[in-house]
Image (cartoon, rainbow, N blue to C red; front, top):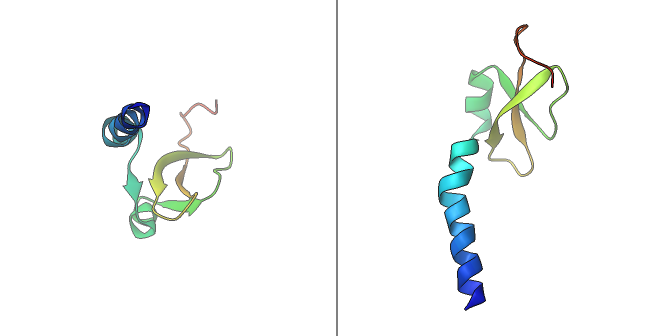
Length: 69
């Protein structure tokens, strides 16, 4: 019974919480938004989405008014 409970929580997380935080994009869409799919973003860039490629995120250069924290 516990396995179904954990499965239900996992499916709810994948369905509702993860899409609200960020979306999955393909590398072409990331480059159209002037970004690049990378494994880690440098401090001069910020993460905006997650790429379809395994362990890659879409990074875009920060605007001057963005905080570096």
